[in-house]
Image (tube, rainbow, N blue to C red; front, side):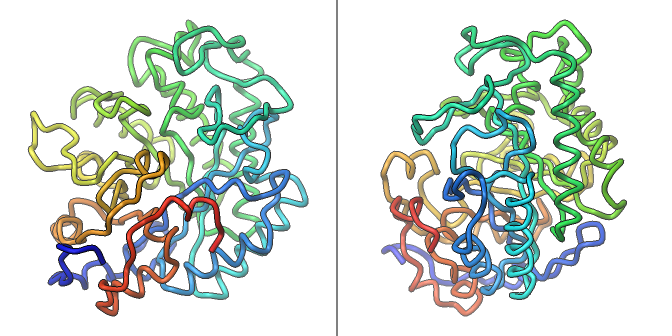
Length: 378
């Protein structure tokens, strides 16, 4: 581990306490965060993908949330080798992955996605087989790009999310996550800038603009088992604007999250640039977004954002190494129940044995994150 990093964590045991999410028993509080790999040719995961996830399960990760997998819409993906969760070949491959993870003692949930108008951050020279879809025909810059989704396209997309969730349960997954963050389609509907619809999927308030997400959750709950966990990933910030807020105050956040819980969300996965950042410093100098979500709703809250590293993911994607660092602050927050689960991304991408090394006090063997890890399924 890099010089100056603490090598003792006095409250480490809290990380390995079991947790129950609906009917799903988790052996510890560590979640593997979803990280796009784009190494599934034509959307079909490979044997290497199965081995990649199995290694993390075998080293004790409590819950694996897979990389984003496109639902059954022609423009749901923005890269040719991004996985999908529909079609016979892809579902058969996912079944193999689920079986491998379960055999290693792990639990796994797919992250379901529709990218909306968001082009690839990896610069892939590719366009989907149908026009990109968005609430109001606007690119993320706010400039015109295509046309607004029709009522029929909105309905078909809601149905595609529900079919993917049902397929996930039939395939043996332990739950699902919806990607409602980071300027992808669900998040675009939340956005005042990008959702300028005048129908029931638009509106002047965040709650008004949440109808799309609410109807997706309701459609999913209608086709999966009552105890099947449904996680919703959310972010306040926008890429390159980490100070942006969809919910400007805790009061707005409470109304928004409460409606999503009522619609069927069992857990929130709250993305921040760094988990240690206060979500509303003018109201509480320390509580992060996951902390606010748990405080306001009482449902399971997952924190994520530069856990175990100095330097955020955008710096890593720009080619900069990220120094490994102490977990003490995160452990202290977990000890006082600020949140329930902790999602870890790049450290597990770098080293499948990361959690074993933490458990066995071998932190001195944990390497800094290097961007070369993005290109492999090691």
